[in-house]
Length: 156
DNA sequence: GCCAACGTTGGC
DNA sequence: GCCAACGTTGGC
Image (cartoon, rainbow, N blue to C red):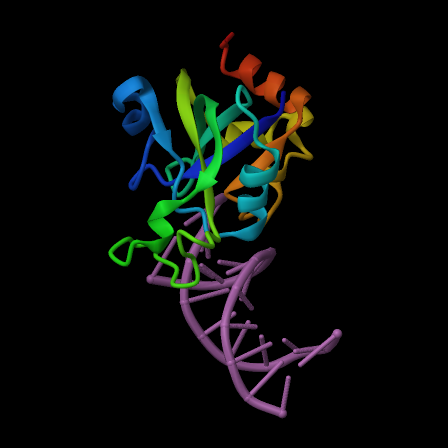
């Protein structure tokens, strides 16, 4: 079992949007970064747990936990000319971008704001907290994941 | 709105 | 293969 963090701007897709999906499940389309793609395509497994992070929010915050319910498959929005994330180099025959399905597991009672997280010693090495970190899909260590659940007063 | 950090592109 | 220019991310 692996742990991850995925970012989304709440203005474009928030945890409440996920909560309102049929079966609280969505496909994580639109990732156009190779490192993030590789994590999804090569390493994410069904049952893995994902921290849901609101970037560009006030404050930015971890807001809940989701679960990988379908392993990677081609991101079909990449060959849709009308899609914002259209990539002419990606085709159904030779897909360049991949996605997974995630299902909401738990929305935190209160968001864990970034300023609060910055004070937590056990999270000091977390990729998320690194200055300039832009990875939108990133691995999380188990001890970091556990610490965050504790901070959120949540059990799964 | 500002700007630092980053990833990608393309000329050479 | 190098690296400058550029566009984007994302905290503040």
